[in-house]
Every structure is written in C-alpha cells, then in structure tokens.
Image (cartoon, rainbow, N blue to C red; front, side):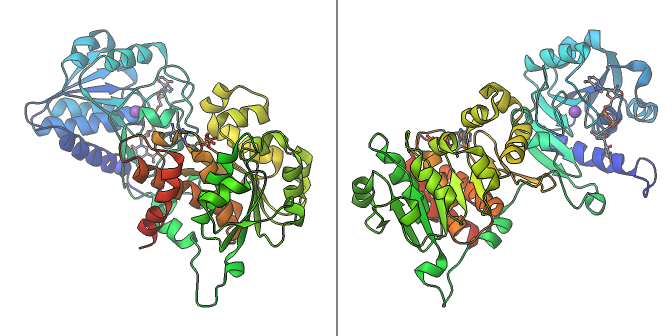
Length: 462
Ligand SMILES: NC(=O)C1=CN([C@@H]2O[C@H](COP(=O)(O)OP(=O)(O)OC[C@H]3O[C@@H](n4cnc5c(N)ncnc54)[C@H](O)[C@@H]3O)[C@@H](O)[C@H]2O)[C@@H](O)CC1
Ligand SMILES: Nc1ncnc2c1ncn2[C@@H]1O[C@H](COP(=O)(O)OP(=O)(O)O)[C@@H](O)[C@H]1O
Ligand SMILES: [K+]
C-alpha cells in the first residue's frame, strides 16, 4: 500500500468485485442491490463497488452499521452515483427484497465474531432469498484460522482480494464462503515468501509424484510394508494394500493376520510371516489400520530406521516418546476423533479449531501429522513450515475404509522416497480426486476409491 497511490488497491478490489457482482446478476440495470457496510476498508470496498453498480443502473442502498464512522470518500462516491443509505433498523425489507446483497461488514480486520448488531443483520440475511456475495471473506469468520465464533454470514459467493485467506480454505469457516473467486490486485510481489498455509495444485502434485525410469526395478522404486488387519478387521489390511499398490512403490509387503484375505484379492502382494522387524527389505511402513489391540507390530515398525505411517489403532497403540525420539520420520494420520484422543480434548474442539489441533499434534509428537475430515490439513514438525490444506476432497469420502486406502497410498509414496509432508500432501490430493471420480455424485465405497486412484494420477500427470 505504501508503494501505490492512496486507494489504488481499493479501486482494483472494487472494480473486480463489481464485475463479479454483475456476472452474478441476470442483468445489472434495474436490479436491487443492498450493501451491508461496516466502518473499515471492507465496507469501503463495498461502497465503491456499489457505486459502480449504481452507475450501471442498479438501485443500490447501503445499510450503514456505523453511520458516523463510514469511509467518507467511499460513501460520497456511492451517493454521487445515485445510491442511497439506510440504518440497520431499516434493513429487514431491504434484505428481503434485494436481488443481491454484498456483505461488507468486516474483512480481515474482524476478530472474535460479529458484534450484536451485525449478528442481527446476518440472521436477517440468512432468511433472505437474495444472492449473497461476501466481500473478501464472509463476515464473522476468523480470517487466519477458519474458526467461527458465534454467527457468521453465509455467502453464495466470496470475492477475495490479493490472496486466499486460511479461513476460506479451512472448515468450519470454509463452508460459509460458498464458491470463492480470487481477484488479483497486484499483491503478489509483496506477499510473504513463507505463507501460513499452502494449497497444492495439479502441477505441484505432478512434480512430486514418482515416475519409473529405465534404471528402475521394483526395489529401487521402493517397497512399502503394511502391518495392518487382524482376525477381527481383515478388510482394513485389504484396503490399505489396495491403496499401496496404486501409490508408486515397486512392491507391497504385507505382515499380519489377514494374509488369506489380502492374497485372495491381491496376489501380487509379498507376504512375510513375521513381524515388521524380520520382514525383509522395506523402505517405509504403514502400521495400525485394523490392528485391533496388538501393540507388537506397531512397536516393531517404530523400531525400524525407515519412515513409518501410523493410522487408526496404530495411533492409540504407539508410545509417544518412541515416536518423538526415533530418528527416521513418522507420519500420523488421525481423523478428528483420534486427534482428540491424542490431545486429550473433545472431537468438537478439534473440528472447531483444526489448524491449532494439527499444529499442536505435530509439535507434541515431533512428527508430520495429516488431520483427516471435511478439511484435510498436514503439518510438519517444524512450526515454520507452512501447513498444507488439501482442496480435492468430497464428503462422499466419509465412508468406512476410505482412510485405510489413504494410509496405504501415503505409505507407498513414502517408500518411493517422498518426504512425509509431500507424501501426505500428494496422497490426500490423489485420494480426494479419486473420491470424486469414484462417487461422481452418488454413494461410493472405499474399494472404488482405491480403484479410481490411477485415473486421478493420470489426470494430474498428463
Ligand atoms: N490491506 C490491503 O492491502 C487491502 C485491503 N482491502 C480491504 O480492507 C479490508 C480490511 O480493512 P480494515 O483493516 O479496515 O478492517 P475491516 O474492514 O475488516 O474491519 C475493521 C472494522 O470493523 C470493525 N469490527 C471489527 N471486528 C468487528 C466485529 N466482530 N463485528 C463488527 N464490527 C467489527 C472495527 O471496529 C473496524 O472499524 C480487507 O478485508 C479488504 O476488504 C482492500 O481494499 C484491498 C487492499
Ligand atoms: N465430510 C468430509 N468431507 C471430505 N472428506 C471427508 C469427510 N469425512 C471424511 N472424509 C475423508 O474420508 C477419509 C475417512 O478416513 P477415516 O475417518 O480414517 O475412515 P476409516 O477409518 O473408515 O477408513 C479421510 O480421508 C477423510 O479426510
Ligand atoms: K465481508
């Protein structure tokens, strides 16, 4: 802002916002637009965009939350363009009869939830049939964490400026944003080199995925060991192997009580009739899915000097100090319930503050942590490494066993030589995309998700 003439960024933001609003309306001329206008620059963006819509023939009314602290220049511009103002007490009919409502109550300056007057307006807005466009972010969410304290505006569309904010990518706040569109206002050069959060895209993942070369053989591509399943839960072993076979390792070695079930489905699996300790050559272990109550395979895997992924029962059975002090890396893949048990808090607390939870787990275990759920987050043990958020998932993945597929897939990528952070990121990305392909708008099963992984892989790399 220091480098540009005063207000230049705001004008870019307002121009992009007005254009997006025009796209969201069947036509601008004659449409009714209501602006919810707070006292900060978020309100000012909204007023400038409103002025642009008023000049194109929309009937624009700004509801002023703090009439004496409204951005004076922006307000003057709206009035000059033919817009009008109203107070919060007159807002109900304006919200009820609007075609489009712009939420400019607060932006990145908002902290600690909406104040009572804004809460009241958000309630009226929820009952309105108007299309709701959030300016920069839905007012009431926590921009930097994705937490929601109390009421927040629910938008159909969010027009965000310069860069995505964590709250637009992490649940529960993400669910308030609707679809998100980024307007480039020329901030790229000024953004920090190390962001708080990264969301990898197709090209980033394509660059990470291992590809065999002429010199490859099955051992050089990596052998992933799966220590999973029990007489009670043989299916977990089958699904973890299914994921592992599609993850890029050259071979999958299985140890555990579900040998028959695994071989019946996947004859290509190498079987070792021992624990992980004596199983033979393995470049990474997956331990825990369906392990029930036998701690020995988990302890043996952790005693090796290769990367270990702990999932499901393995998370409960592992000794924290052993994880902390082992030299090779460890990747933990809990869902919210497992994360809650590890942290000694409730599941609801984890789901309300995912970013805090994933960082805290990574710190306590000195391990990389992939926290599953409606938003998947991945944190490295080093607190300065950006947390990764995966954007490809779908709620259809909430089906029994899909986590087992993910653990096999991530383990396979670990065995192929990816770092825990990259293996977890690439696995979550492929798994989410495979979930979308497998579901395609209808219920799917973990097995179908595993079978869709090659399609997702192909889609990313070709
Ligand atoms: N920083 C930048 O480079 C740019 C910022 N822009 C806009 O500026 C916004 C940030 O502006 P500000 O820093 O003025 O802050 P905001 O406009 O987000 O909010 C601050 C104002 O809201 C009030 N407020 C804070 N918390 C509240 C709550 N919980 N309930 C009700 N009112 C509350 C405060 O009293 C304060 O006056 C961004 O979100 C974006 O829309 C854009 O104009 C483009 C450039
Ligand atoms: N609401 C949701 N939206 C998107 N993905 C979800 C949702 N719920 C669960 N998932 C994903 O589905 C998988 C479920 O894993 P998990 O809970 O371990 O199941 P299981 O133990 O049955 O295998 C994870 O990858 C998780 O991120
Ligand atoms: K807003």
